[in-house]
Amino acid sequence: MWSGDYRFLLKNLMLKDFRIRYRNMSLGMFWSLLNPLVMLVVWNFVFTKIFTNPIHHFSLFILCGIVPFNFFTVGWLSGTSSLVDSAGLIKRVPIPREIVPIASVLSNCLHVVIQMALLLVFVLAGGLGVNIYWFFLPLIWALELVFVCGLALLFSALNVYVRDTRYFVESSNLVLFWLVPIFYPFSLVPQRFKELYQFNPIAALVLAMRDIVLDAKAPSNVLLIKLTLVSFLALGVGILGFRRLKPRFYDYL
Amino acid sequence: MKKDPKAITCENIWKTFRLHTGQRLLRQHLASWFGEEPSNQFHALKGVSFDVAKGEGLAVIGCNGSGKSTLLSVVVGLAQPDKGTVKVDGRIAALLELGSGFHPDLTGRENVYLNAALLGFNERQTKAMFEEIVDFSGVRDFIDEPLRTYSSGMMLRLAFSVAINVDPDVLIIDEVLGVGDADFQTKCHERIRGFRRAGKTFLCVSHNKGALMELCDRAVWLDHGEMMMCDRIENVFEAYEGRAALPKQRAE
Image 1 (tube, rainbow over the protein chains, first blue to last red):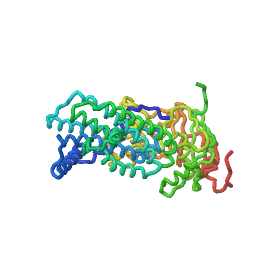
Image 2: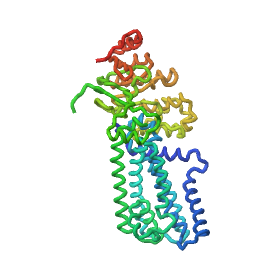
Image 3: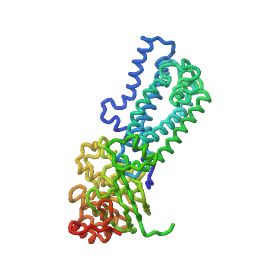
């Protein structure tokens, strides 16, 4: 089979995804800043002018929610449609197929970096400052990446067989948006749901981000363990499911 | 490692596609999951067997829809046969469709890098052969323009130039010999002849008789997924061209 340079291939596929997304846009990369900024303005208006709330640093509070959630949504969705979008590649070039959804997820990482820079600006402007626990951020983001790669592998393979998968993912994202504490604090979640919330890797990531950025404390061990477990479980299921489904990709693309 | 004189061995290859009316319904999948035999099947390959010795050139001929491209996909390992075995000894490079890894919004240069990576080259190798690829393609003036501004001839030239630089043990080409103008075709044929002289194996699908007679020794004739004949290329072409006059005869 294919015996080439995985890293070079991954790099080129990521570059491709990234380039074609912005090549023809006048504002280019600026969109990845504009998008969260617009949401921030709207929510600030709704939740400080219409509904009042007692949350300090409300902009930062929301940013800690939408940056991870945006990455999750875009990664999961673009990963899911990646195989069908690259049907020409899958049917005609004998590359390892796993690399296509993974490259699609990874190509979103630059947005995270840009949006984290935006977060840093808000942190400094709000007078909060960077603390020692920021060292946890790479770890929890890596776990998030593992989780989304797992989802992308499984759902991209399913999407080849049943094209409705894409719409299922879109609807799920709408539902999840409300089930992740993006614009409400975790403390308002009823006690009996709290345990469950922490098993949702996106909610866990948001909670960990808030602990670190807003409260300057380390995320709890329980939270980190749950996040790690679910992320690697997702990756395992994704890899196994993909392996099981890939022999007949050719027939269905 | 034991020495095997065969580069490709295919035994009794069957490939079946399920016909569907555009809807890939969950119900269909569930039915087949529970072992229900689908009624609407299409047999693309019906028990095809052949082998290619190392250093040999084999042509696959037949009408449109006779299973030629499916056969190549099976040999390359892209499609999994329902029955039968395929054995390939050595590194394969397949050119099943020119520019299948190309993207219209990327520039010629970016596409060369992407395609080289898809074909299995690393960064160092790609950099080293980049100039040669561009020279061979003759589109240097437009190399930093997006591919969508290229004419189809220019695009095919660039795609072929990347692919021809692969140095595999087995080269598999599907219908892409008729690329570009006469000059460029001569250049491509020259490359493939050099490749054959170096003792490499060559498997090719084409409708271009002249090119095939020049580049291949033997031929396989497929008709509706069945192998009609596998012999010296002159004999196969003779039978193929006189097929209307002949009663249908089966291989084996």
